[in-house]
Image (cartoon, rainbow, N blue to C red; front, side):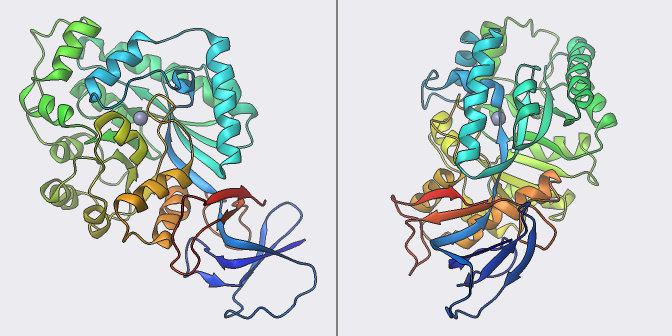
Length: 393
Ligand SMILES: [Zn+2]
């Protein structure tokens, strides 16, 4: 049994508890969370830590298998250029991929992450995930804009999912996005989708252009970099929200990732069809700066009522895999954002979106992991450049 205390405990659900006590059993299961109303009376066997205690973080968007691309992709050139460079540097070297994925997995553990929503196109990181102490929800991604290739893309994703399931790992099939997937492929995916669906959403100006006009840098990427013959291809010609509503069941849990170019209109359209009870918006701020040099309008997204989550994206578009660093960047750009809100996004919201029932909050019976944020400004409850995360349990 351990009794942990700190200046504040952010439970993920309730308001921060000043000098609260978190009681854990020997397996790290929450026995009790005690609100001491600020009292710091001596208690026997209490471990007091200066700082803020939070549940373990949930990283709702990563691509572990791309970890080998660390420091390899140029910054700030937009999505088509980014995808082109990823393709150029694509490797099938299993040892290189696994060794980078293993390091990334360990780094996430040290950074207080306990569970991950991880997108995959291969089985290259399967072994790393199987042996990991982190929990993974693997999203087997299918993409392809040509209808004649839909069947093949779908059956490849099915094979990957099957391999994961055979090893007892949680895996579902998802579309990469709405702009890079044909109607035929979206239909096939929706038919087998039973769990949370997750897709890249309004990440770039370029995807909005190619969806509405069929033109721009992404079209040139399809034709010149991938070598697709597009004479028979018809661009969707409808908005993201319309296409979403057409192909993804409104009753299904949905995690929309990035939302960098969401505006009032796009949110209102989304709200017409989707409920705030089963739709989450993930922010990957450092990746957005790397690829697009732009952040989402986070205050606008907060006002929408859709619950927010956080993700690191992969080492292809980030120099670290740290939820604390993502929060620090948000606070720099939007200083009015409350730390308690960001911790809710990083814990309970992510756990609910991905179905990690044991994680995300300090409710009795859960085993959420325990982080300590030190070096914060405790008067104003803000992160500072000295803030660090340490894993306590
Ligand atoms: Zn991604």
